[in-house]
Amino acid sequence: MQRHLFTVVLLVAIACALPFALPSYAVFEATLVITYAVALLGLNLLTGFNGQISLGHGAFFALGAYTAAVLMEHAGWPYWATLPAAALLGGTLGWLFGRPALKLDGVYLALATFALGVATPQLLKYKGLETWTGGSQGIVLMKPEAPFGLPLDADQWLYFFCLAVAAALFAAVHNLLRGSVGLNIVAVRDHPIAAQAMGVDNARIKTLAFGVSALCTSVGGALSAIVVQFVAPDSFSIFLSITLLVGAVVGGLSSLQGAVYGALFIQFVPRVAEQVSKSAPWAVYGAILIVLVLLWPTGAAGGIRHLKHRFLARSKP
Image: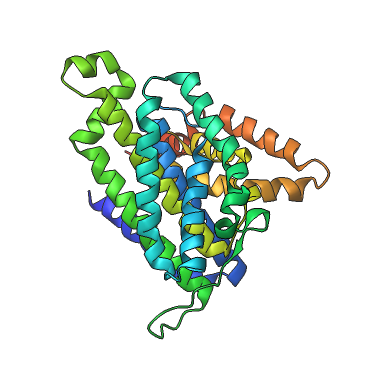
């Protein structure tokens, strides 16, 4: 217990020190990692803990991003006030989408969510919504400054703001999974018939998981829009949904830490691949992905946990 507490305190201290040790662009990238981690937290809850495969979570990411952008640009809302709106809208639409999706399972549910991801960019370009969404040109936002005269530049402030939101969401999901609802979520994934026989309402649990998952991913999208200061339909193509799923799997399903590892993969591996080969970066990306999957079949979280156990076993007298 003391070791676990020490690890948490050490990680918090490192996270708080990073913006003062890194240049501005690196702080910006670290903030993007946090936004992706929040999005993957939602996808991990749905796919990793509840067993529902989604190929369309980029749509909920876009929903959160556009909710924040439209409220800031057209309604004059402060950036922080857009997060509850994005969470409410994402959670509600996720719950509504999860209701009919109850009739689908496995690859058929994946196809339904894939359709959602494919349709989203076209809907955002729809002329009837162009007044609000900006059409293909998107919406440009202003970067918020640090409040109350805090001695932080804009990038440092956004880092701490996103870190606080992410910490709150990770703590909330952690507590959810440790309670009876979390046990039901996992039971429905592992043994749906047995869970139903024990009195678990499978339909309610699956819908709840979909709603909470979409809520987290929408908040991640809203944070991303605030950090990047720009939203456009082409930023939320089906490739984003696939990228999120790849990040969740590589990071480690059924693990909250896996969301962080997956976010690091999404943010940095494409750049590493481009530095290795500018003519064929996606070939390098694919090779890295194959190596990671072969090396750590349970994801980075499982691989690191395995290495940690081996190290502790060898250190014992």
